[in-house]
Image 1 (cartoon, rainbow, N blue to C red):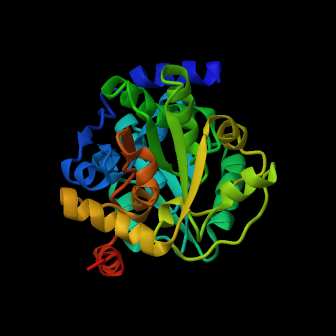
Image 2 (image 1 turned 90 degrees about the horizontal axis):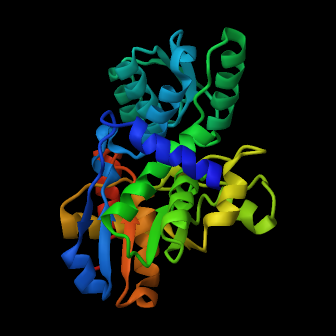
Length: 322
């Protein structure tokens, strides 16, 4: 933990000014409705519309000259955009392997940033395995979306910012996929604000890391369609995020698709922001447990905004409560 925290501190200096500090905004409407002081960490307003710019920038930075010949990664969207942007700024060629199921809008966004796309007909795991194979064959570094200490350290800069912006937080709500974001943020917060509760939230339809945590080791688990497409995907065997998640996550929650849609709608109504399903997951976790945090100060990480208009409008209808 201490070694990872040192990497996070280094990343917090090293990725600037390429990666800006995201705002922590007080939500008067949500605070009034829920009876707690609600702060929104606005990583959905980051370049490329996701927190993924943090880890990607830090990994490319730490690779240095080893990345000059190009890097390879696999992604369903947000990570690919982050690596593509970091590569473009650093003059590093980027190849992204994606499953054919990846949202077309995210594919176009990655390509617009100058990356080369390789699209696979199959699940995301197959695209990732091929990307790793090509990395070995071509001798180019592989930029992992979560299973990498430098990537995790980059995501952990969000935790450094949270502490600087609000050192008195009682809880932080974070959507969990492969565990890179919560591993980094949780590590930073445990060092800087150990009394802050780290709450991991999963969609009921995709709870791979949660099932593994409950089993005590990484297992395969079924996944279903979810609005939170940015947090889907199996957890790699041997992933470094697993033991970190065991240490830093204090509470776990799961939320239904209706709850995710309601979380997305509440942010749209309160702040006029369009957020993606994975950000809605974190909001839904707070909505589900708001009574527990009455009178407390909590932060919700809005991790991304990369959602199609059609999917967003569908979520708005699904999340209607009147």
